[in-house]
Length: 129
Image 1 (cartoon, rainbow, N blue to C red):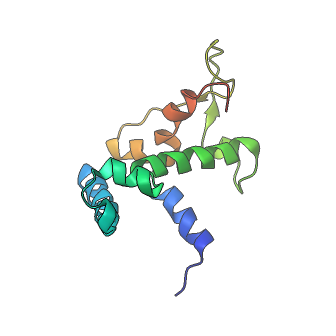
Image 2 (cartoon, rainbow, N blue to C red; image 1 turned 45 degrees about the vertical axis):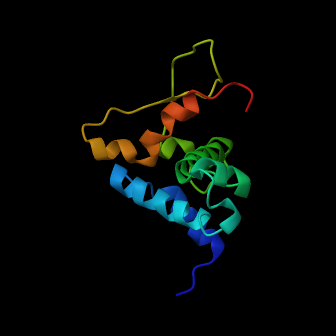
């Protein structure tokens, strides 16, 4: 079955590794890829990423999460913001006015769900988005 690029990208937004061993294994794949360029082989991993114009996979997952949440906030996504999040009642003076509240969860695995993992990063954004 051939998966087009759009379907593949949407899978990235949904899946986020939970265990640090899985995160490390995925990052190793990109690490090995960057060593394929002979002129960059002697450079440290972070410098190879910079030279190739790449981000670490963790940074890419974080960015994609925030972009997906922005689509929900602006109504561009196929689902509504209220299906996943609640707008916070806290009217603090810092940051933007679209603060989200985080639901309490009893299971550590639940912390990795999209609706949980993106709230802190979203709320820490400045007003200048």
